[in-house]
Image: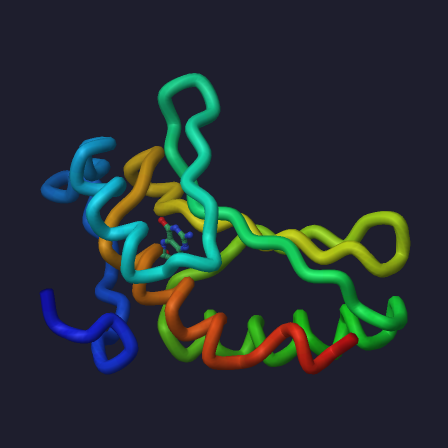
Length: 118
Ligand SMILES: C[C@H](O)[C@H](O)[C@H]1CNC2=NC(N)=NC(=O)C2=N1
């Protein structure tokens, strides 16, 4: 598998794309070890949490993540709860599961170093 950091997310065509199997996801998750693989009623997603120092730092982190998502054309679900608890979930909504796009985005979000917003 090519390095996920050098790959780009591709436009998702739900007529040809299918969600990956749990077996494939359990292999790919090794490449994004800081992320958790979650399965909600059969729909898989990637999830990672950070503690930020301030509410505004959380929003600053979200802004850089948002810019990355727009550049990649693939978007995470952003949660900022209890003022300083950040959680990012990623799945490919068009197929209702995981595709390689999600692992590419997770790799690139790690590169943004959310821990620096503490
Ligand atoms: C055409 C383009 O690929 C789609 O609109 C994108 C936009 N961003 C997306 N983000 C996510 N997470 N899932 C999608 O299915 C998705 N689709």
